[in-house]
Length: 237
Image (cartoon, rainbow, N blue to C red; front, side, top):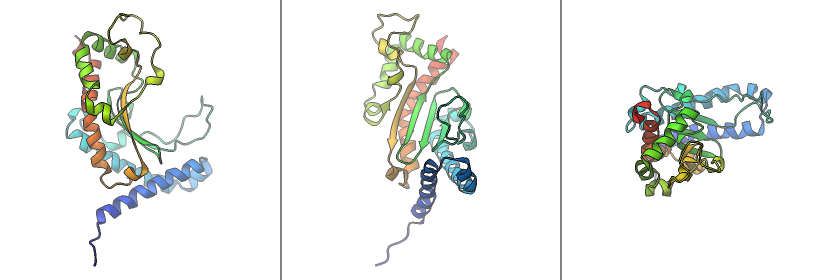
């Protein structure tokens, strides 16, 4: 009995498997000689990841119009590392990453991140290392209207499906200038407001990956919206 061939599945795996393979080999040969010899593979992999980022942007834009006319090429981080002040002198990152927010990868708005790396892939949403002025606005909003914030972070689906990041960098004491008797003092000890979800290689190779990732981002949309509102001056006047 002959079964119909699902060409969409075959095409997807023909894209993602070589992409993961390139990153694995780069991790094993993280030097300029190997990279330059395999530059065409890198450029091909980058094209694949750019196409994937474009699909994510289109999916996110269906529920979050704040991305505007964001283009995939403006969201992707360089694979070349800045090793000038680092003890790790390996010249290349071993992953592809994209930051999807208004303004692209240089934006300090809350947004959506995807990290593609063999056995270490994940998505995240929120803000990571916001400038001190924006961090202060988030903390002020939490103190002034804690109920709205707690409604977002205590959503059962958020707790069930995602892991909170930034706990390792929390302040030991409350930030200076805020009431020490604030009922939710731990919430303003955070320096980052972000939630994430890991993806196995098997999930990365699932032809429905884009659909699954967009669904997860939609679950994090209330967090992104809250943070962008808090960081806007208009929202705090």
